[in-house]
Image (cartoon, rainbow, N blue to C red; front, side):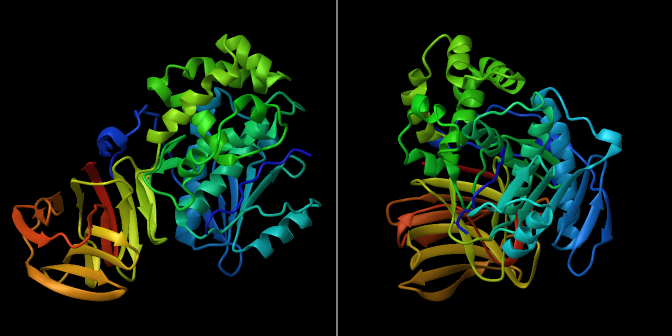
Amino acid sequence: MLMGWLGIGSACADDPGSVARLDAGPVAPVEVLDPWFCSEPGHASSAGDDAWQVQSDHYSLYAETSQAEALILSALIEASWDAMSDWFEDQPELVADQLFRVELYADVDAWAAAIRRDGLEVPQGAGGYFHPGSGIAYAYQQPTRYYTRQLVLHEAIHQFHDGVRSPGHRVPGWYIEGLAEHLSHYDWNGECLRLGRLPMVTQEDSPAQALDQPIDLASHWMNENSVSRPLEWATFRYFEHADEGAYADRWRAFVRSMDAGSQDALAEFERIFEVPVSTFDEPIQDWLTNAQQPLKAEYLEWSHVAPGGVDGWSSVFSFARIKNSVQRFSMTFEPAWSEAGAGGVLLSYQDPQNWVGVVVGANGRVSSFEMREGQAVWWDQGEAPALIDGAYSWQIDHGTQETTVQINDQTFILPLDFEPAGGPALNQSSLRFSEIEWTP
């Protein structure tokens, strides 16, 4: 039985052309740009309590979520149809104009019941499932917004992939999952989509997981099943993006051959690349060191947008920090908050119980938020500067004992209580941070 599923992990927008470039010094991977694909959501109708049916050009989406999120998911998967058509250089035929069905359930029990309804066996330990017998992509809500959307995309990619492969042709599980894992990491700015991306931040952090695993491609590829989703993601991304896309053409030729009916992945790869697949074990391991997500979300309320951009939302103080050491950090945001809201940067960090952030608040004041041994204290730092073009632009520069904080045209000097850090922070707000850059 062919199946593709993504295991459960830990638990309107700018114009695409204006999205800021990620520049993280030596920790930044080479950026090979992928095209954007834009789409409108379909027509939504109520499907009962907290459930919506959304019909678009290619998809019939059933979603147990808010109407707003159902419409976003509809636009997301509709844009993915064009993105996948471009990537595969092909698209499935919609027989008798029958739409592809995607179903998102509120929890695992409802998801499992839907799979049983269609006469299928429920996979264990999965967050999503596609089976060609029903032709439906099934998923259920995950702990984070980005991961739920990624999971829906992952299963829709399996569905699309099944429709463009040679009919009846089976391919290895590691290949199916690597392809879907790679493409389902996405940029989404609210209107347009790119597949096969390296996010700024996710809770699951596949690149970090892959970095901790030994690579033996020959042994991995001899297995018919999926062995390691993170390593399978890394394999696809490496051959598409490493060395400024030097291997991309041959890798696409390999993918086309596999989908057309090739029965021996190792032999086909070595025919096309003219070297043993093991030649790439060490290069992939070395490449992974730099092909990492730069931010770590200490809390769940963070979602990748595009290079240099993340969304954050929280009713309490929350931040996403740069994983590596930081000497300079900068970013921009437009204020959008309640009377008690605030947005700014993480200033220093030792551990979850000891850190300091500094923010501009809706009250027009700059404040530092100090967490010491788990005890939180607010400190007033003075009047906030005026907005420039409706935004606050930040830059922090760390010294040995203090940090210079530049907010628009105003400077603040604050003590450096813990290790120098950087990253977006907010309190009781929903903000989009852009132009995120830093220097180690």
